[in-house]
Length: 116
Image 1 (tube, rainbow, N blue to C red):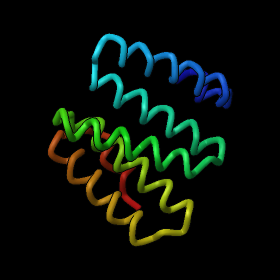
Image 2: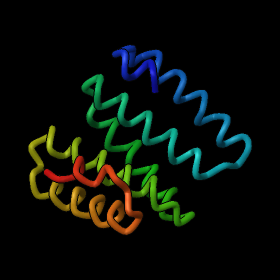
Image 3: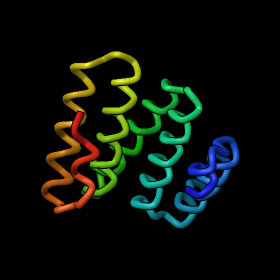
């Protein structure tokens, strides 16, 4: 995450990919969803919106399968931002609403960042 915050997106993606592989090898689906969301966030930062959508979608599917609500919310939040970047306003609002509902149910303090 530090690499990403410092704008070193290629390195961030490499490290997130390594984390993804470790999560898969140890069969930690929650961590796998977390890594996929992180990869998607780095892809969005790099302007690769198609990859960001694909990775957030995969994270969302996995998080739903294992009822891992924090990463479901994060995936919806990420998809809301990507769809907004793509001028898909209706999809962005739908994803933001789903993220907000999940974050609210989880009583997460960062709810305000989901509002579009």
